[in-house]
Amino acid sequence: MKTLEERFWAKVDKSGDCWEWAGVVSSGGYGSIRVDGKMVGAHRVSWEIHNGLIVEMDGADYRGTCVLHKCDNPPCVNPNHLFLGVHLDNMEDKSRKGRAANPKGADSSSSKLTDNMVLIARAFYATAPKGKKMEAQQRIADAYKVSQRVIRRVVNRETWSHI
View 1: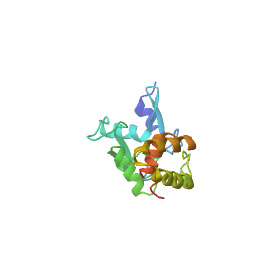
View 2: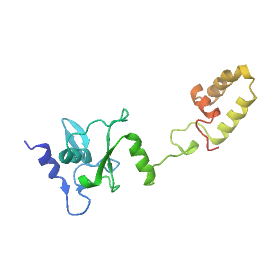
View 3: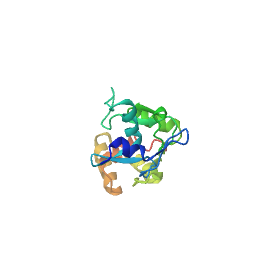
View 4: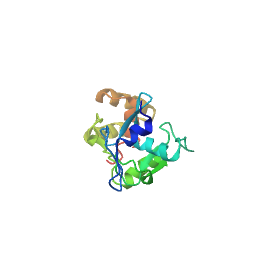
């Protein structure tokens, strides 16, 4: 049976500056390799082959330590193109490189509200008497078939702040 390193190197094309993964690739374009029965990012395996085990960094959140690409090429496993960071570093790196798709409001595929619904909800909420604000949020939520929390965040401009 082949070792992890043998299986790894059998799937790496080192003909360019980026060492391209030639094995299984995820929908996001990242190489994947099976390790102990689980699919793992080939770039993470490359990091560990060249630098040792990835340990949790200070400030790592529940998603743990990330292996990021300097080259912004997901199938690349060249260790010189990789660096460690936490989830926030990964999100900031994506944003800097223009890859952070963050649709707002009705453009979000998960949105149940429209711009007009938000404007009506805010207007209705604004006219509610001071002691009836929570009740107003719940009435709006019931009408739009969303949670009261969604409406609270809308009327407080925690979400939908672009309108």
